[in-house]
Image (cartoon, rainbow, N blue to C red; front, side, top):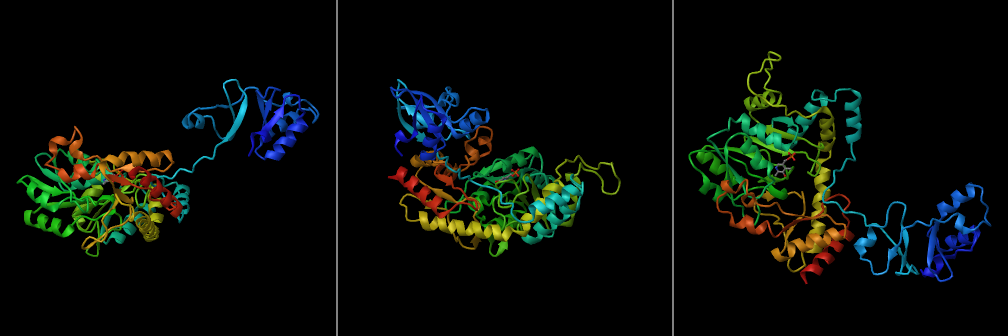
Length: 473
Ligand SMILES: *Cc1c(COP(=O)(O)O)cnc(C)c1O
């Protein structure tokens, strides 16, 4: 639209200005002197307020205009200009250094595409409200058991022990297994730090090993090499939805009499050899943080088939308090309980877990269709033997030199993407625990997690493709 359609001379009447605003349909006019220098702006809201204040339509526009207003100066950067806009200011004049109006600018805020987003569209609110109205909002209440039963059942395990988050689930599992000082626990180099932190909380020594080139999961060959007579447990992490090679890992565990504690925080519903992850370890740990496949806000769960470990975890979760004698503490425990409110949300999420995994899977297929022909993009491995991954965060690799530029260009276009985890072996506080990790160091610098939410449209994926191609060319 021509700038002329916004201009209103300062000796015009309110009625004149209303005509101009009506014509441009942008809700604003710029008031100028006869040199075309701007003296004010007037919005339809300003006019309404002036008329209500008993001025009439023939009054001077100067009665209604704001002489203190927002404008952009010609040549200003886009980023600078963007800061001028707000909920109330959607159209601003562009002026030269002498305040002559030369153009206008309109801002269409880009809808941000988040990396992850909880989807709470089933019975979540109903159950949450039910739990709330029951006043059982702490950690006793029917939803805790319902959530524990339905989720453990979903994973094919006998017992579920809900916890305050995924990190406390890992710690609880290791404590229940009696792991502590003098023991070694093997963890992968690529994981979220909670995996190794939980080991360190117990006083045991973590041993960090490299990952597989294709799956990005812990490498069984590296586990084998890292075993000593102090090794007590292995924590395989099913990373970015991809199951670890559980055949090889279970075999090693059997040979060396080691515990397997699965970290399933990123792979609810994934399968190995037709069996769900979480059904291999003596204990398996899940997180229900807001960005995971299903969520309770904050929350976690330990699964086991072992009745003794189940009881032990329940006691440790509840201050180490005896189940027979209240307020008698048998062991030094923790408060790692989940609330009934969280469990209410979780119960509703479990009802929809297959539906959620369904759209996630379709979304990943769409991404593959649109991105697979781009030279320079490597998609996460699909259909590795026996492994049925799920789509937690759709993940790709590009050459290291392009990785951060791609994340940046996406961010500038309001698309959230994030780099892979920094390898534990590259962080000062953990590097002393690491074996040689060549693969993880490389892949961590190539990997990008892309937005994986129910609202990512084909159009967004095509836009992501165009933006990536711009960097790769
Ligand atoms: C999210 C996550 C955790 C920790 O879960 P919280 O609920 O955030 O404590 C542990 N391990 C992995 C691999 C994770 O991605």
